[in-house]
Image (tube, rainbow, N blue to C red; front, top):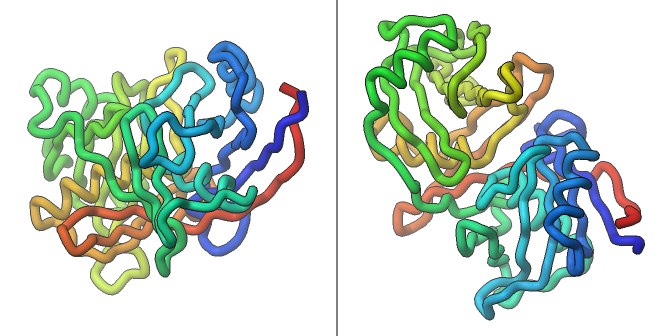
Length: 277
């Protein structure tokens, strides 16, 4: 069966092929979990999503999010990319100016802002201190010492991130990790007055090696909640990600009237058509 398909670039810096690509199957209804898994493996992108009718009246659509190896309850760039594809395909939200996405983590609000589409950061599943022995393993895998780490916390909003704050962006860019034992997000501030307030990198283990994600919405969301709560950041701000691997991702962080954190960026459609599934 032919199904509508888009490949979009999320958190792009104003031009295509600078952010994080996402494959979106717009007509996902009727596909089995194994069919979704197989197609996600075939695209070989960090995530592939499938849009489905919602199961609750509050949501506008439902999304299932797959990496090449697993299904995720929530992820940031798939949220923005899926919403963009849904709207571009003719989706009409129940509430003007706001889309409600249903995913494994629950309902996620997405709104159009000056920075492009933005999602409301979901609550953290786990926060607080990282166990000392585990932190030592993470630090060693990054090729740095505990003295290089300003602070560390669990920043888990679904993918399971551990967040590390280094003294500056230069230290983040200099990292050459070995094999990390867990999903790790590293952040460091740029000098005052720079176009971007922070540099972010995301590492995760895969088959005995370490992969780096180009631009990561879920990580930026959880890092923002941590940095804002502890007074280490002031919103609005922009974070850069993907620099070392040749991307120019830009993630825009803002806060709502209730202190809720919103994460947004440009989404650009690069490929449209149909897939046989």
